[in-house]
Image (cartoon, rainbow, N blue to C red; front, side, top):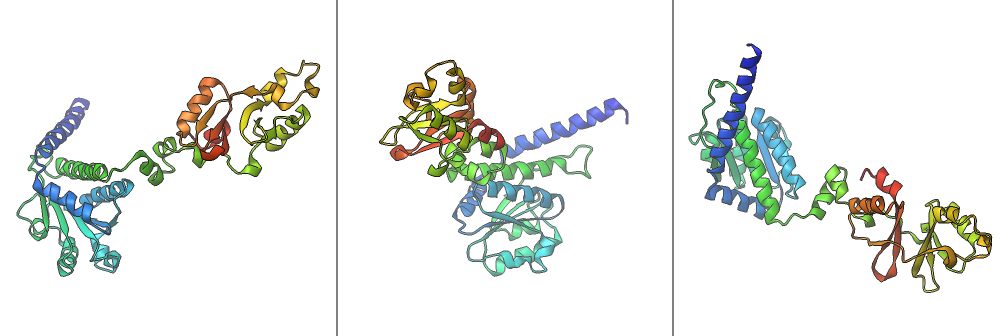
Length: 320
């Protein structure tokens, strides 16, 4: 096979899969809606089952369902026959079973178990006259595709299985009103989850750790507090404990030539009306504000005049 033939074969695969997905997009029917309704009403978890390539695909679909708030777990059909069926709760769970042929022998144990306990079975296969489709409560038959020149590798069918599962997950996500906040909860370590983190979750908020200083404190006390708290700034508060200004170590350096500096009070050298943001602000937006304003700290204002502080180093260490 020369280079041109290799490229031709690669293009042939992609074109076949595009054709398969176009057929799939026209195949969604009442049975798909029944599958969605069954999973939405499921009080327990979706138990996903598949063997071989279908097993790899449904394992991914199971992970996708869980990531959008639909409790799901993958069970290997062979392991199910040796004790893993103990994970099932017949009164609350449902089965989602995928098979290219629909006649995989290893699936019989799962199917029999589902029938015994009258559990809903959503069966997805490419052959209507198959064991899985006949045995399923909800029957999903994928459109027929012709694997031109690739009869031994059903790539288009496996592509349809994966796309069908993605479509199911997204529909359920929208029906369940799965929000950005939910996504951040389930994906705390992912890049998207981190971008959806709010400043309230990573800001300094303990009173004993906050760099507060009274507005009548001396400049010497300001320097001591900045050094002690190590945030590069102090928040100036009045007798009502309301933040009225901020003093950064940069402010002190810029004031060093003032002959009367040491005789002044915090309120004399502070920056009044400092930049503040809500504790509901996304961390990524806080970082953008810092970059635009060329500042390294932001004051966070919560309800009832409770204050927090976030430093750019905290955002960077959190990989925002």
